Image 1 (tube, rainbow, N blue to C red):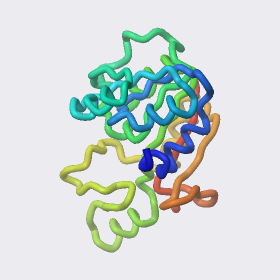
Image 2 (image 1 turned 90 degrees about the vertical axis):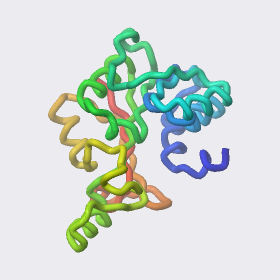
Image 3 (image 1 turned 180 degrees about the horizontal axis):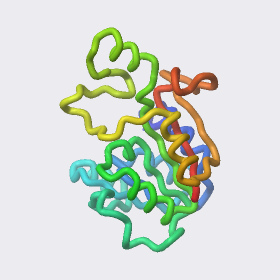
Length: 197
């Protein structure tokens, strides 16, 4: 649990959560975030994860997780059937960005999205001076092994929401160890947004 408590993105998401909320965590991984939300707020949580090994870890924690590919859609879920849908470090990895986000907004009253900022200054410098795809703390993979498909910046996501009529209810930006309050598109490693339709 120490790893969970040390993750600033988990702490921020936990701050936005309400007690006894219904939560759908899309791409929940090994369930650490879902477990933290359950411990802190007694959420009624469900996860969807494609990696079977990660699902075993979730089951060991007593979490309710389904094996599935979020790219396949959420047709089995009714409109606004969850208080929160979470896409933390998973939206940039899906094949079909727009349909997945639309489905999340349909199913959730609020959607929490967290993603790496590909416009961080270290990424820019590596690309400019080295001429190579950047490898940074928030982008730790080489180009040939990265799970990321969509390379977006904080400004890209804000522009996308504006162009689609998506409401940004809250936004926070994360640096190496602390939150970033100025020039987030340049200085933040990650962005976390609470959005709704």
